[in-house]
Length: 124
View 1 (spheres, one colour):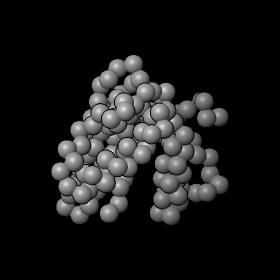
View 2 (cartoon, rainbow, N blue to C red):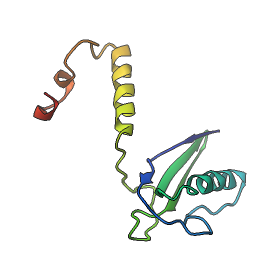
View 3 (cartoon, rainbow, N blue to C red):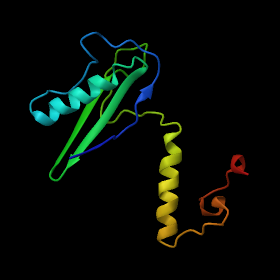
View 4 (cartoon, one colour):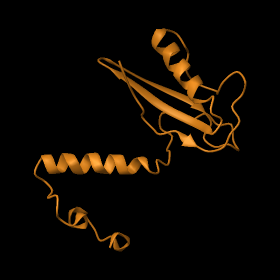
């Protein structure tokens, strides 16, 4: 079983309730309960506000949402909630660049801006 984080956690100061964060996890089977335990562990650190994740297995994709979209509003995230992923973007960019290099679509010593569809002066 591989648990893939579908969306990054929002790392803002918040207060989780003593009973744990709000969730749409029905906890019907061992997978649901395992995700619940992992989320409860994450939310022990009170800096986490919201979490959306997906578990992908052959023939089965499940989405789970926990916490809140913001510290100020108790609105449960959904599988379509947008999160700012901050520094994790570098990991995605590096992975995509490595894949492009491997596929021969990019040169290691070339100016990265040449592969972009438009000009980005802030990258100069």
